Length: 277
Image (cartoon, rainbow, N blue to C red; front, side, top):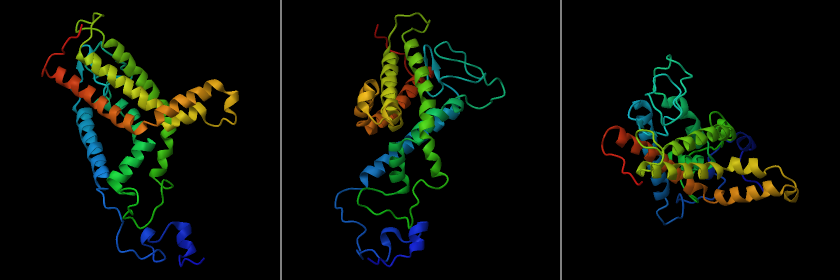
């Protein structure tokens, strides 16, 4: 059936998209009557709020340690200009030449993991670029090339950021264990900050293991699940987590920001950490 579309346009991705002359001439941009714009607007607002907050905290280079807690934004601390701390890894492998905030040395890995995450890609494509703004709502762009061109083609490195996110999560687990000490570093202590760190690390691991890359690594490229019962069982467990990937993406994003903010409040002397036992 002739469509009236230039084959060259189909091959190159040029054309008018849903407004192509060969499409049905419908004046309305969509036929949805609900508040379809609310979800992408809230998504954009939530992501923007995190970007603003994390940028401020990463460049502030202060108030990230309150014994025995260290902010997850600054752990592990890899520069010589880190404040003296005993609450977490403080490996001065970058020496004194690094003059900026030490958070910038480590945040690239968890942020890169989230930035290239399949869910977050959908979220900010819709929220910021309106590509598309919502289901059954035409995007305003005249052409669509997907993730086939620079810089979006770099999104495919997500699977490698997954490997980088694992040791970061492991170090934050170590920080959580050390949170069971008091300000004098004696064991057998639990404060409200300990609970905050526990909840945060559980959500971080749940989000990490619910990742699509993790699911593929565990059970991908298997022709016969029956010959790999252990991997099949792990694949099923990761699959159940993957069903809640969006929820875990948001809750872990909030928890890591809240853990940092809690340490900030303690470090600035806003209040003392309430002791549980």
